[in-house]
Length: 300
Image (tube, rainbow, N blue to C red; front, side, top):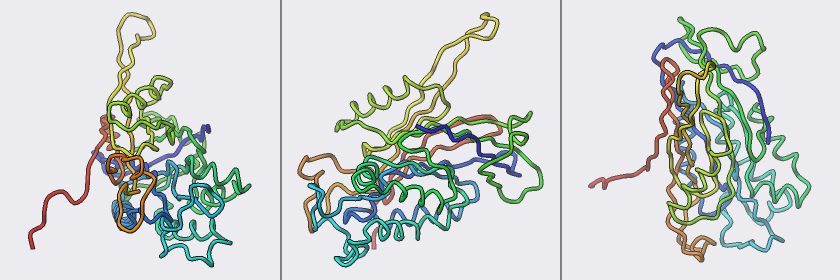
């Protein structure tokens, strides 16, 4: 777990709405990765000045020869060829960074998941994650971590400015709005929506934060949780909300041409994509948005 300090976001539109996108469970290199959707959502971040993002782990699949889970049919042949296995990690990261490098200026943090952790530990390659952080010019939050977002309204700015390592004198100023974020890759093996929500609630019970994000369970869920307290004089009852969400995956459960681990376990189909948090610094409103692409039949 890492506490990675503050990011300062200065903006010139008074009623601005920011989109916060925690990308997770991409599993780049797996044949089931919805690559077109990964690229589409990354492009949307690039096109929207008010979109910010971070990585919550399992950005690559990392299942290589020698791993008991290895299935050659599950390898994405467009990304990894047989001759690429001696530089397996470099090849995967090259492909992933071609998508996310163009939006590195909006990257807030980089976390790893259980797939990264297992591969890096077995192969003594934790420096791979360090290099990803350098590529994206963002701090590592490891498996879980914190960061604060300070939003500062500055009339005259035509586009938001993200300062990733502000000076102490630049933050905690009057008029700024601070949003505290906790990001955790996740650990639950739950299969039903109710059990996944329970896992999210269990995480939130340990935290004092504004936005809590979990991944790993390949689902999209969100819920506000309320903590009770009192004012400093113990005269007035106060409520402090935490918005908690589970961000989605880009790994399809069922695909043609090979049999995935998820199919063997008969897991439900994955809700593909990212769960967005929408934030209005002007009034402090925070909303979690779940959604799906491709809804409705296009008649041709």
